[in-house]
Structures are given as structure tokens and as C-alpha cells.
Amino acid sequence: MTETALYPSFSRADLAFERGEGVWLTTASGERYLDMMAGIAVNALGHCHPHLVAALTEQAEKLWHVSNIFAAPHQEKLARRLVETSFADRVFFTNSGAEALECAIKTARRRQFVEGRPERYRLVTFEGAFHGRTLATIAAGGQEKYIEGFGPKVEGFDKVDGFDEAKVRAAIGPETAGILIEPIQGEGGVRPVPPAFLAFLRRVCDEEGLSLVFDEVQCGMGRTGHLWAYQGVGVTPDILASAKGIGGGFPLGACLATEAAAAGMTPGTHGSTFGGSLLAMAAGNAVLDVMLEPGFLERVREAGLKLKQKLAAVVDLHPEVFQEVRGEGLMLGLKCRRPPAAMVAAMRDQHLLVVGAGDDVVRFLPALVVSDAEIDEAVARTEAAARTLLQAEKEAAA
Image (tube, rainbow, N blue to C red; front, side):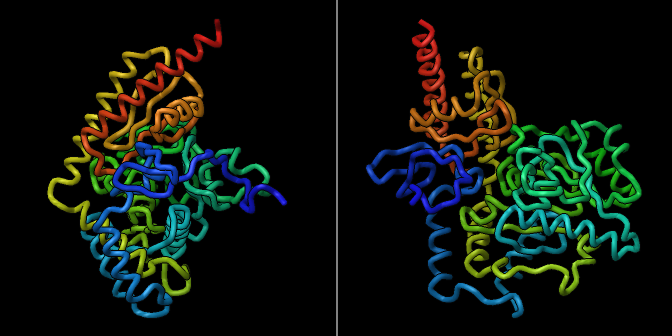
């Protein structure tokens, strides 16, 4: 018998946690770790937030699951709140970000079909993107390391290298249905897309009759200091995929769309067994309760600026280890001059949890409720990790 009954598809750290509170995780032996990755931007309110726990407990004692063939007042409530705080008119609930992207892709294609242009089904996508792990979303992301070994790539995606206006225009053809982009690339290395380029994409979509689709799975739901990342750049999409932070740790995703974009998603065109469950809706509403409190998003922007400035000071202190800090709000990337895996390990030795991205970046994605004192502690541990790594390299070279 093998050591594990699990698929070996994750490179797991030999570290397990038993409890969590706020931005802290504790092992069974009592070791505490400062969590600056929040389950990769998932635990938006931190671990075991009392309002979220209470909402889930209350719902769990009443009803867990009802099929989507019945009326869904629990879904209507959260959908209405999402519509009222965004550009959207319609919402479809899913269980994950990949499912939200699948719905977004289908919505963009179906729109063209019902508008009399069935030949339009392709989406323009971008180098460095990550949209999920389904067959369609790995094709949309276009990264060979995720596509290899799974047979023919799903057709319908045209990847553009860089945020280049001329290349986008060249990629658009008679079969193009829309443009899919992350306002801030997360897995690609915390790379914000220039607002002027997003505005260009909006104009092109309007000119060509295309849908502009934003993937806000990682950068949305308060992460940038705005409820939706698009609100910070002033460019509105037709379709938006959300997940991760929207459920505060409970599996939940959503595809938001305008009335025109969603017009083709009629009965029978899409569905989900578990999407929009009562537990998920309770979690989503609890998350919104907190995020929509006066001053919450302003505090995220303040905390993000503080963390960014302090990490920049660490870059100045150790330019031989770090190169720059980039990102918005509490979605920050520290570009390294060492492999990200080495930096993540060095920080973990300091009981600080971060996560790699791209080829040379470690991400700081703390819970949006992180305090100033916890930011100071995270920065101190980052600096200590750099010093320890340099000392180890010096000793190894001696």
C-alpha cells in the first residue's frame, strides 16, 4: 500500500493545522503560524470569523440542500445584493472559480448564438493567465504545463502575448465572441493590467460586438480595496467570474452578467447540483455583511498601502534577495532574485505562510481583517527570512 490514498497531484508541505483564528493558524502541537496567504485569497475574513461561523451554524441547523428545481429565495437574496453592488443584472452560483469561469465562457458564447452570430465562439486570452483546472479553463489559460497530457486542447481560445493593443486587434476575427482577462494576474505573478489597456479592451468590445469578461476569482471581493477590482480601474465588464473570497472559505463561486450578456442562458442551457446551496448562500451573505460595513474597504486600502510600503523597505534593505513589490490592496507580490520555492520555505521557517506565483514572485494575500501589528510582524519575519537565507548561502559557499 502507498503512503497516501490521495492523488499525488499536490506537492504538499509537511505541515498540518488543527485550529485557526483571524490571521493565525495553529498545529496540533501548538505551533502558531502567521497566515499571509489566507488559503490563496480565500479566507477573506480570516479563520473562524464569528459572524461567518454564526451564519453557517444557524443555517446548518435548519436545512443544507434543496435541488435547484425548486424556488430559491436563499439565492435570490445574495444575488440581489451582488447585483446592487456591481454592474450586473443576473447571477449564476457555482461551487468554485473554475466553474464560474466555465459559466462565463458559456455565457459569452451563447450570447453570440442568440444574437444571430453562432459562428462567434472564440475568446481572446492573455499570456500568464490562469483561469482554472477544467479542460476549458486550462485551454483558456494556455499554459503548456497545465495542458500537457490531457489530449487535444479545447478549441476556442486565442492567446495574446503581453498587453499589446495591436496584437489584440490582430487576434480578433470573424469567430471572436469576447475577450477574457484578469484585471490583476494572480498565478501569473501579481501583474496588474494597466487601466488604459483595460479601457482599450472595453472600446474594442463595444466596436466589435464582443463581451468583455473579467476573471476576478482572486482579485475580487474586496481584495484590492474595492468590492470588485474593476471598480478601482473604472472599466466595466459584461461578464465577471467570482469565487475564493466570496464565501470566506466556504466553497462558493458566481458568474455575474448584464441582462444582454445573460439573455442566452435560458432553462436547460446550464445547471449545477450543488451551486447556490443554502450553506453557501449563508456564507456569502455573511461575508457581504462584513465587507459592506462602513469603512471596511477603506481599511483594506490603508492596510494594503502599509504592507506595500513596508515590503518596499525590505526590498531596499535586501536588494540582493528581492527586486520589487507590486499589486493593489492586499494582493501583493514580492519579486525575488531566488526561486519562489526557496523564499516560501525560508519564510515558513519563520512561521510565516506565503505562496509562490509565476517564476519569481511570492504572494502576500492576507485576510482582509489583518491588523497593523500583524502586518508589522509579517514584515519582520520576511526580513528575518531574507537574513537567514543569505547567511545559509554564505556558509554553504565558505
